[in-house]
Length: 363
Image (cartoon, rainbow, N blue to C red; front, top):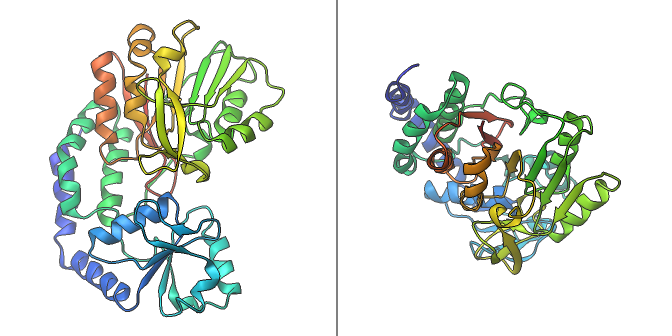
């Protein structure tokens, strides 16, 4: 195993190079030519806003065809795409979407927007973090590096650091394997599967496929009513399933919630609605305990694991926990699990071209 400090030293050397600093300056020159509009007012748009702010670049507004008014977190206006041609004609536009980038470009093209005004998130040399902003997390990343059980996991962690600081590409596993990676996870025919953040049932479909219809029970937790209704419809006819219209948390309460963001709906202090949340310890108090827990709960993973303490201590379920919503998730999640049981082995795998979709496995 190569020393973490040596690996980090090589990354920092690149960050201190003239070439790196020139690229940053060149990007700043491009962005300073015109005001900036972020096309996409969802989670990625906010992430790009934060990244620009870290580099000292102001944003004029967000653009979105499905939202309007003021952006919840920034207070900036959200304009309609057609406004980009007239009221905001003297702006550059950064497309803030992975799945709908091509569709957005086509819409802008149909509006007659000059292609020279349009930039994709990956085209500009905008690093997810600056060397200064990542510094508070490096000690934790080093601890996580030595907690991980295989070299591939350690490379995933290092590649995430490189992506954040250098915008380098991320090698990743096939997305369809997410949460069920056969290198790590073995599924039996009597699984009790918890799908925390079930969205519209896409992970459920994968689970049923991998177990070939042989399982004990499936539990899906989803606080977004629109998503849970879609999930119920898509999973209609499946036996031994329970869909719970609640979020996961460390206890049973009500919390603010930002909905209607498709897969990015989440518990949020700025949210306009209120949802019920519960803990797995409370919910499974009088039920057969889960054998496998998956969590993709948009930043609530740590609190949800706190609410699963007894289940983990007493039953040691397999865990597949998203570890990319917060910079510290890479180390706070395995360290918390380690306090419950010290016999877990930890693995990291990544499943997309972007910084999103990194999963911590504990078995």
